[in-house]
Amino acid sequence: MNLKLQFTEAGLAACLSAKDKGLKAQVTHMAFGANAYTPSKNQTSLSKEQERVEVSDFEEQGNQLRIAGAFTGEFEYPIREIGIYCGDVLLGVYSQPNKLLGYRTPAVKVVQWFTLGIEALPTGSITVLVGTNNLNLILDSEFITGGLAFVKNQTALVKQAHWNLRLSEKIRQMESSI
Image 1 (cartoon, one colour):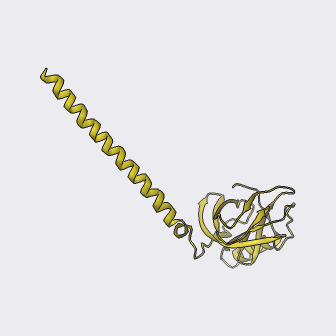
Image 2 (image 1 turned 60 degrees about the vertical axis):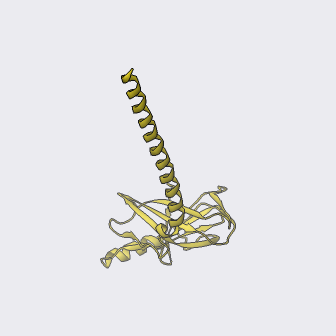
Image 3 (image 1 turned 45 degrees about the vertical axis):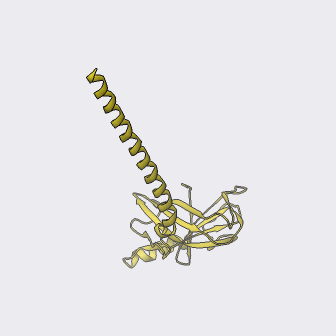
């Protein structure tokens, strides 16, 4: 999801403070909330936060950070706001009036990717801290099952191609002996 985040004054202050100390502010959490509204730079929390999780994975892409969070709890609510946190400080919020971003149910794990444009932040002032629930560990069994099915399918295709090759060779030999 590539959405325009409203950075907060508190989030920008955290980035500047970290940079002044020779450090980088660390993006640590993502949160979902249930209210739809126009975010404000004065916000310090989501309007109606429902669930907050550690960042599970990230990729640096120039002036963008692509971060992911895995929402796996037993919750049900409409997703109408997304918050990005540096520790306990709300870095930024995405929401729009009357807009539903998704729906969270207990039966479905939501792995949410969020592309964060960091060009509005002080250069070199931010990084991402991946939590203990690394996305690679969370999706391990699902990827292994899918990978195994793919390998079995490819094995069957190779066997079929080999059988066709042997059959073609036998036909060629029979034709050359006539």
